[in-house]
Length: 357
Picture (spheres, rainbow, N blue to C red):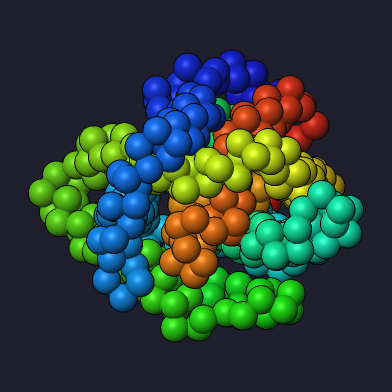
């Protein structure tokens, strides 16, 4: 047990926004409900600014959420894919061959059967669409925070996130279309592909150009400074989006306060189930802790910004699908922090060195 004895990092290592994201989201929900009740003209006026059924204010906010993450993707890191093949194999398999389908199955089970008497059928289908979008959206750059809190291998984390984002460009739309179609929801392919292009491929391309320019000006240090400078705007964009979402959804929540809790149930089961699956396989495979922990955390985390973006674009700002993705945002941080704590308490289960993996 050599360098495994490093003190586990605390949540104080996280930035102000990331550390208290669940509280910020809860405050944004309250603000959104209040705005919808006391000043409904504001969200209604903002909703009129749109082009080709895409809300301009929301598009700006979504870009604020996504662009800082895209700018830090290092495509050259994919060349190191052979460095940790077992961790990459586990997370990639979980993210793309298991997670979307278990989320869809849990959604059908709970919304169409267990909660059938509590949720109207149309609302159930909307919530189902939202959780499917969450299940099909892989990890976000927030996994760097989770990996850091477990002293995870930073290079492996970067490679895995880069691989996931490249796969996402090609696999996200077909998987979502298949799963939504399989649950009898009509999918506007043109809108779905436009969303992926607008919110994934375009910011990924612009982020790549921005990264290259920053590296030319000051190397990786310039990229780090840029990331630190713009990251708060990403979270602010998320919070303002939540405010607008709940300004439209406030009436539903006030009328049916159990809706949020019901949507959260399959999301919580999915998150903890996926983590323990990946963590257990990593332990059985003898993967060192500094890869096993981020491997399982990356497999568990959702790219909630993308899920929110596509839900809004596909089904509308005031849709149940959008509401379900926002519930995903609300539960993400406390769930991930609890899993970080569990991982740090069980690091002795794994080899300490980076050995072969």
